[in-house]
Amino acid sequence: QVQLVESGGSSVQTGGSLRLSCAASRFTYSNYYLGWFRQPPGKEREGIAAIGRFGITGYDDSVKGRFTILEDNAKNTLYLQMNSLKPEDTAMYYCAARPISSNSPPLVPSSYNTWGQGTQVTVSS
Image (tube, rainbow, N blue to C red; front, side, top):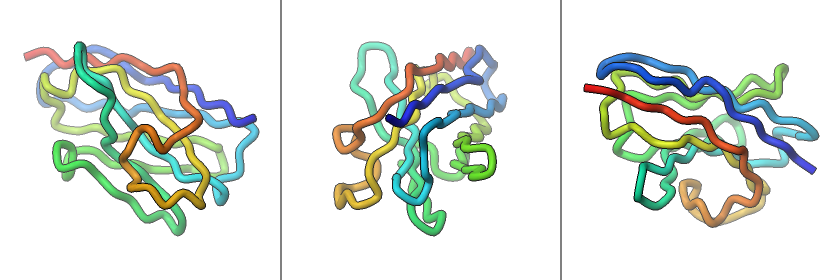
């Protein structure tokens, strides 16, 4: 069974940067589509970045140009590099995986069946 563990969340000021990590175990990258999601306080979980076969990536408009999803297959680790952070980026951040065969849009949370426990990011103004 695939296991995902996020880390790297912290409190930063507006304009700052953070890199989140998601360590995967019992995992073969070629079999899965990976994504980063976040859930702001009092709001629903939303997809922000995903990476699939051949390293093709997709981003939500709210983070495009500021966030980058990266994978290091040798380390079995997924990253989310976050730059130019804003207070509205404050949320619990999760990584997730789903079978590569899924045809659902890549940023739909309900299409992912394996989740990490989350890591908190707080951006202050």
